[in-house]
Image 1 (cartoon, rainbow, N blue to C red):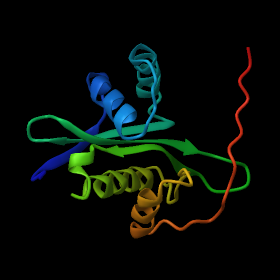
Image 2 (image 1 turned 90 degrees about the vertical axis):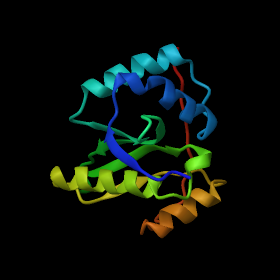
Image 3 (image 1 turned 90 degrees about the horizontal axis):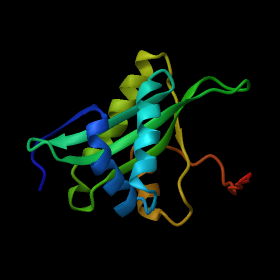
Length: 149
């Protein structure tokens, strides 16, 4: 059981823990060297990207959240959650909720009052968690990808 944890902004030193969370909890098999390059770029772009980790008193990363500022010409700005993951043994202890609350506070400090996210159709437990936090399902979509040479 996790007794104490705190939320802080992510740093490059969190790379290994973030990679493990992405692999084990989110199912993304992405090379750590590529992840390092991506993380370096994201950390430099604090105007558009927000990254935070939940850490216990032993300085172990238990979970993280990554969001981007989502701006369109047809709606007010929002924060778009790109990743939210908590280690399986630490789930159900308020860490995911605290990470979303951190993001909500960070958004309000930027005068952004909406948080959005996409979640895979098969992630029923995640959907229940989001709804418990007050998120509302507003649309069903299909995802399309085009990879160019």
